[in-house]
Length: 627
Image (cartoon, rainbow, N blue to C red; front, side, top):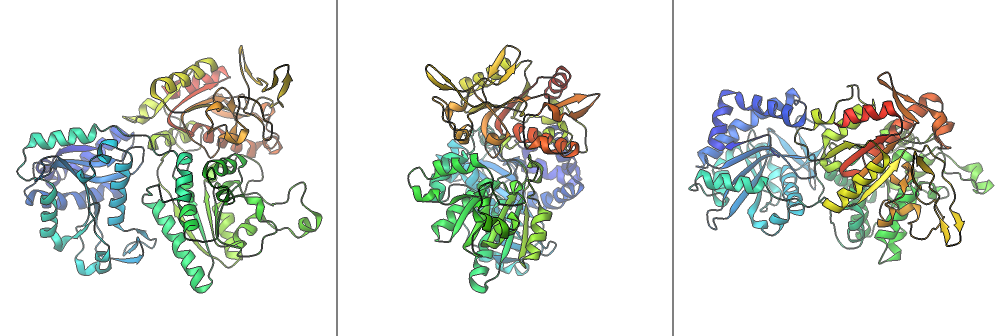
């Protein structure tokens, strides 16, 4: 999906009158449900006229141009896509273009760049566009079969080569080469080498139609790729801030080896922003390089699933996956890197019920243990996903602990939404729905525009379950049903035929069991750790502790009576909760935790979400908002 599409000559005429940035902003309001910041409008006004003029001057005024084209299943947008035909083969040919207004910049290390107007490092623009090309190939079967049809360039139209000398040292490729304002002749030659200036408008239009009509395969499932990611080679294409995070960790590891320095890296991002992809990419790369590295979480479900999937062929791989409380008795710097995924689940202490007395007496804070055990501890977290009292993973807590222990601190903020079909609109809709955003709730139809993500409501739990079945049958993929923790969770019961799960979640005449309890094995049902990843998980209701950290294609969410709408606002009701941990919270904290719980449940689906509430007033509200 692109904001604007037309020939280069037509768009240049619009740009020269100043109309093009306004058109883009209007289209953003129409397609995305909101206009963009003034800074982005100024960026369009500064970058598009000179670039389009260079395209037209190269004799390519008839090529079809896509502006602000969003990558499939991703929030990331390519500045420009040029669509035409190849001068030698006559086949469709596409050029992805990343435009930068920098006048001065210098390479920092590896793929990172420092520019004159910012203190934080950014990804080298050639590496940025190269990864966009690879990502597009990975998610587009037709392009994967014709990789020579795709090309990438980065254009610094305000910079002379003398202002960015070290950036030119970056090795060019078909997917990425760099041009500056004094390289205009080379830029024209490059464009004419892959786009035919003599092709007619109809050929360019057909190429653009083909590009926009490509079928895109779903994003690579995280769990299916974990084994290869860790044991063989890198499988994920990391974009923008994701790759910046990886580079910062690489640099910190090298500093630690060379000068015995210690660096804490914090990666902040919402649901589906790519935190776990970063974690697995780092784990695979560092393990293959022989670094002492662990992946740790506070989630039994996530850790056990990673151990099973990634360690399927090699049990030694399973030892890479740990829990936050495994480092209570560890010596300082036992590891080179500790990757703390889902770090919002860090707790005050690692002491457990059966911790030995002499260990308990000298135990400190869990966050200090996690920092001390590695030269480079990495924390990936979403501060709006704390769902239990005592969870204290936050930027403020980690910053204070790092400073107290004399560590350098690096912070990366991830933007966008890679889960939920890459739908930023859905992430916004959820935040507004639950009152986690200052703006009021808004119906999905008014916010989504042409968004492909599906949001709907069901009038009954049976209808919600039927919706999931139909989606899986008709469109494929996995589906799961989850609910707020508002029903008791019984142990399996014994019958003449063996043990079975108890249908605790009862709503009228409809009843289903929760997923199995940890350590409680039941025939024909997966262990609780694997509810989200095992196909036998459908038919059971998942709770927050088995859903958090995972994703599936189609998500059904039941709002229980612990969170209801009354007189236009949410009311959290602790008396209806069966979560023993959450019930210990005071009223204010319980309200925050229960909203975070439903935010997590709502953001598990990659292709669509269906909602239902047991409360009539709340159900009417959800139906209106899903419309």
